[in-house]
Image (cartoon, rainbow, N blue to C red; front, top):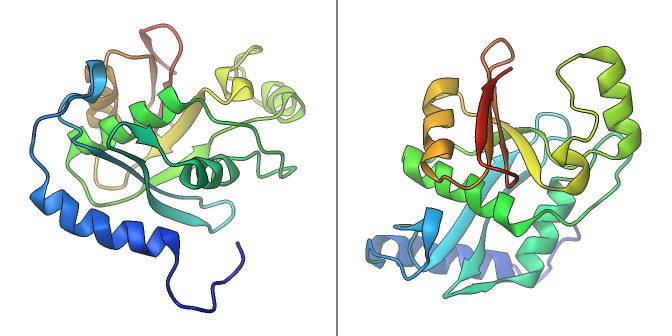
Length: 188
């Protein structure tokens, strides 16, 4: 991302707003379904061990997605092997944010996998039997995530509490798969 010579960025301004809004925000929400209690602001915090990149941004305020924030999330969650970017389904981002909120942690997610190009998915399928042929990762509808401070079981319970998509527990690899597909769960 290009640097800002003024020292003030939209993201920085929104971050400052978020810091005050989170402390003052009511605990109720007008949002329906799995985001009950998420408040009037939605925030996502992640880092990638593959690229070294980090994001910590507000992507939704008062019922509206912030276009620039969503664009940044799409770039962050790209297929890092070939730099291919695909629009990440907003429902997946919402599930990730709601689950993180339920876990009551400040630690960012470590993202292991977001969008996967068909070529990357095919390569991973050749290496592992746990990769689906028609993975929702290829549609920008899934993420594989880890938290050092929470177990796979704790993360999966939070994601399942959203009742909004698929949740896979991968204890051996220490990550949870979250997607916006059909509500289901499995152990990988």
